[in-house]
Image (tube, rainbow, N blue to C red; front, side):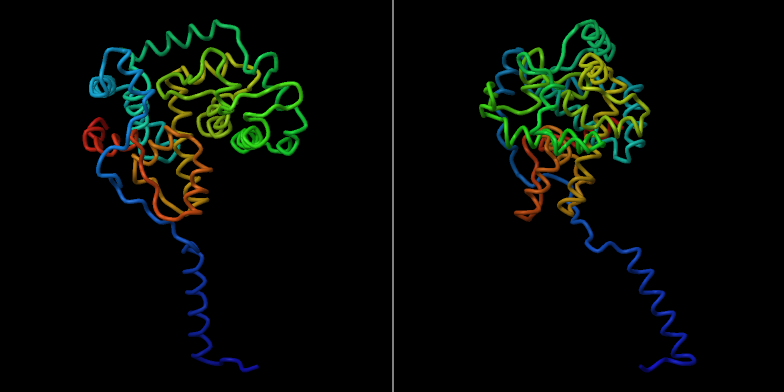
Length: 317
């Protein structure tokens, strides 16, 4: 073996250190950045359910957009809380603004005052209810042997994702034992004791999403971890505007992280994409599908509005 001596050895040593420093600071695969703006020239079709709900309320999408925008524009305290929460979760607050506007434009009507969300939360806090399907509680259901592979998982996001995947593969639309289960989402069957399609609060969060993000919210915001056996506490958390903001931010943070870690795609600069994922859910599954087919993610009708109105929405901040 031949060894370097003198100046050449020293130069080689410096070159080696430089290469090591460069490799340590450079990721093996840099994420592909999704550029700003919409990929679709025209807004994708709005679902019929959203159209019917809006007509039933004797209003229009434009009117609902104007109403939620006005609520945000006139509530400086809320905007301040959104900014503070966004900083805690390391996201741009425009992602939270987009999610709130999208939900209240297409899914629900905004209350005239933020205080109304607290009043409704207090009303639900007085109710006695549980998560389950027919006579089977959620605790009994996930205690079945089919879910044994999830038992060693401590992180709330991975735990409930594991359980949701088993629901999809084993129970959804199937007869297991003496029970026939609906062909519907896990969250719709077991986590909506009042009526189907429920989401609540300023962020319109469903209970399963809150349970998934419970650990991240506890870690970053200091709120108590949620327990699926205490449905009332879950609803109080997602109805309370302050706590709801934390679960909203955690959900958005999770979608950004999922797309980065799974698909090597950076969606943090496109609020229309994060709004789309906030609307659809399933960021990990969608990131995996994107990785398999390649290309860039596209916004749906909900995210399209956010990108289309981006300048207007940024003015709120």
